[in-house]
Image (cartoon, rainbow, N blue to C red; front, top):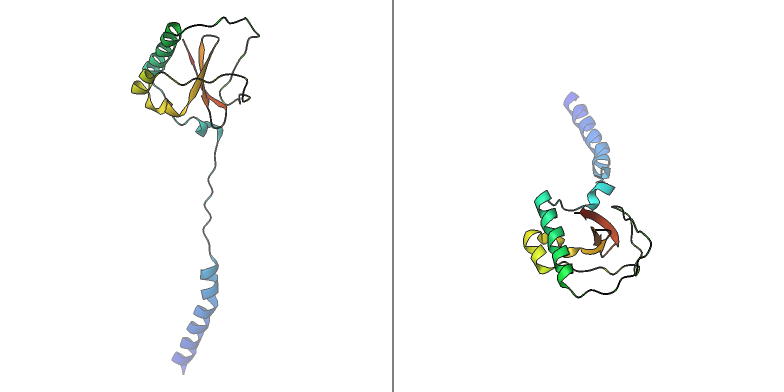
Length: 129
């Protein structure tokens, strides 16, 4: 008789716990921070090579008369209003040393290369001389 009571109690306990076990779920949360917007890291040598290649190509290209305008400052993470500047593709030589830059464009301003993600119009990096 005692084993019948134990068995009945065990069955009742398992029946009560089954819905609780089925009700458990797992939630995964992904947090995106501002630091994750820079998906690459160029070495100092790559940064120098990119800057020199772009400035060399700019000197070889036909130049247009540029009138002095207001000084513009860009910061990493800041958006660039679409249509306010003309974004350029990097010269093919740049992709040999830094293939990760294929997805980005640049604008040359104040002796700086301002790298822009064309999908978001956000400044992702600034390469100085």
